[in-house]
Length: 307
Ligand SMILES: NC(=O)c1ccc[n+]([C@@H]2O[C@H](COP(=O)([O-])OP(=O)(O)OC[C@H]3O[C@@H](n4cnc5c(N)ncnc54)[C@H](OP(=O)(O)O)[C@@H]3O)[C@@H](O)[C@H]2O)c1
Image 1 (cartoon, rainbow, N blue to C red):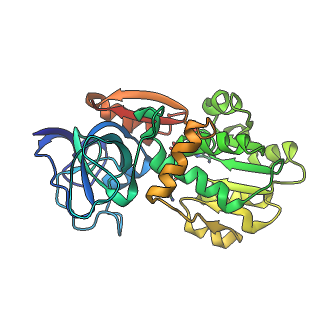
Image 2 (cartoon, rainbow, N blue to C red):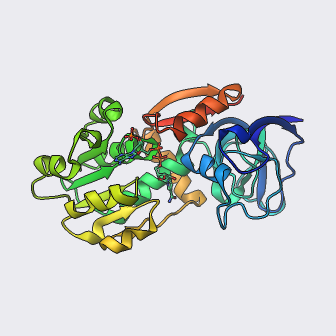
């Protein structure tokens, strides 16, 4: 039996619980993995709170939380290419395995080997936040010295976008609450505290000519407030709010295949996509790890070290 942390019905943090489960059996195209590190993401509590169409319909309870992990392959299902038992890997649990657990199944086409020199802790942050950062900036395709505004710069994705943008020679402006200022400024972001007053006016003071692109990680009113800063509305890329088309922007086009994971890992190895990992929690502390993300307290990424 393997220890796992999840939930038995939809709801708030009160529905979360530890339980034991047999090792999942890898189906076709899946690998069974001993989890070393699991990444913590906002989508984890979103999926605990209510059904998410297309992601969890029909899965039995109890469900294990978590959608990304790094670990070691223990067994393969049918039709798995390019991953062998004993390989250190990182990737997505897309079929309901959940990763806040001692073992899980990862989707082999969405899983890659961890290259030598990359730690499992860093690798565990790349499937969700790392590839999102790469996709957002690729979609913008801005030349060096262009200006990008990152709305919600202080979180797991935001600081990674900022790191990569700085590495690509972009001028980076970011919004966040005062608690995120230090983390953002330490990697070269010119910071706007959205809790300190008129965020649009404060950003315009820093970039009177506007931004060449915006990566929005917040959505809603916040997205609509900063969107006018984009010189070309098509260069507003949103990651969680499909209504971005209403301001002329585009929803992010995601790539989560093995090739995109390998690319993110190479960028991380080269020091261009280095996550800010603010908290490494043991599995027993999973409630605190998810609470920190759910409350927006984490500057950068939180991870759960399982093994
Ligand atoms: N489409 C995809 O494939 C994809 C992939 C990854 C993530 N996402 C989504 O992207 C979003 C961000 O992910 P994440 O992992 O970076 O989450 P996160 O770590 O929770 O970061 C979100 C950040 O936004 C800040 N924020 C909240 N309200 C704000 C506002 N009005 N103005 C500026 N900043 C604000 C929060 O803290 P402060 O308020 O303290 O600044 C926090 O730092 C989530 O909704 C996630 O589900 C989508």
